[in-house]
Image (tube, rainbow over all chains, first blue to last red; front, side):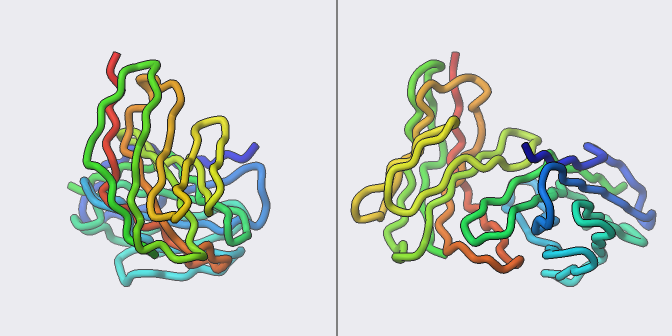
Length: 113
Length: 113
């Protein structure tokens, strides 16, 4: 069966510090991968998606970047965090195929101080 | 993607069936109905999806009306662990990577012992 791992579960970082969140998927190959942010009490905002190694598409201009160094690894990064980067970050994957649903990790709750 | 309307909240007694309605009166012929849920502080979890026929899996059943303008998600024997926000999403399946999920406000289901 397929599993998705995100870490860390929670993170507290000072303003201006760097960020690296990692997501890995097991049990499947060539998945589409996604990074979302969910602000408190609000819906999902798609940040990045990837259809293959090294292929990253950004949905919103921001202080964050993403990379996919391996087929089942997706990394969310920032060189200097802003207060507005606080939120609940979710990684998701789905198989290729129009009907395939997205499956989410347990998320990382990021607090910027 | 078609707009959906769900009740803000519902209660259900533990062990009883939970029936969560969703109205999607503007649904088009090629749009599917997807259901996700989000337990507090966790990532969204895919439940089920369908086009026009009723669907059942190990988690739930999805009943779609003949005119497809509404649907009901049924959890046959609700447990306390089913307490979550349930999201009904209507969308055209796309094979492209850019297929963000858009969650509305959903229904907050509280399962009561």
